Amino acid sequence: MDDASMDKVYSTQDLIEILQSERQACLRGERLHLSEKAGSGHPVIDQFLKTEGIQKYTAYQGFKSAVHHYQREHGVSGLVWQQVDIDGQSLEFPAAHHHLLALPQDVQQMREALPNILGYWECLTAAMDLYLAVNRGKDFVPIAGEELEAIAHRTDWATIRAWQRQDFLEILLQLGWGQPADAAHWRSWPTSGSEYIHAVRPGCQPIC
Image 1 (cartoon, rainbow, N blue to C red):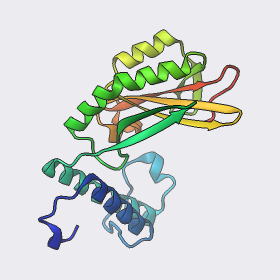
Image 2: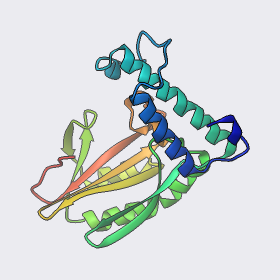
Image 3: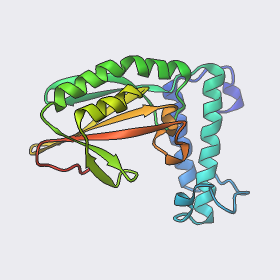
Image 4: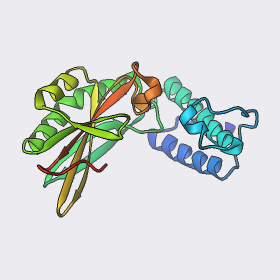
């Protein structure tokens, strides 16, 4: 974001495009956080990254933090609208973009959409087997409907994704709380987090 455009208030889509461009620049090595030598601070990431990789990663994280500050300062939403179409039934719902911050009003909008998302899920998965992802998504354990209701009761927001082929259907329900941008990362637990429920046809196992 250059000085000549300081009087412009960037839209959600503007910020998404800016972040995508900056991310590519960081990956190409055009942005390096040269003072970063020891590590990114995330042990799982550090074991796979060399010093230059860590510099690229932290450069992008620093830029993303600046964008999040800009969102707060100017009230720019971090929401995008997503649509799923499963077995001929469609649903459109608000979700936080994975690189943007969800403002308090964004989280409230997601919370208001929760009943519609859960109703859509229940309608589609009534005859399906349900599994809870455990061990950071590496394993799956069967879950009963009443257990899912208990999780949903303490949920702030939800998203749905689906993978479908001619002979296979898997529907993923993410039930989250706190800041959506942090919910997928275990390091943010318990302030922000999410549970993942996988629905598959009887006799099948989750693959995603």
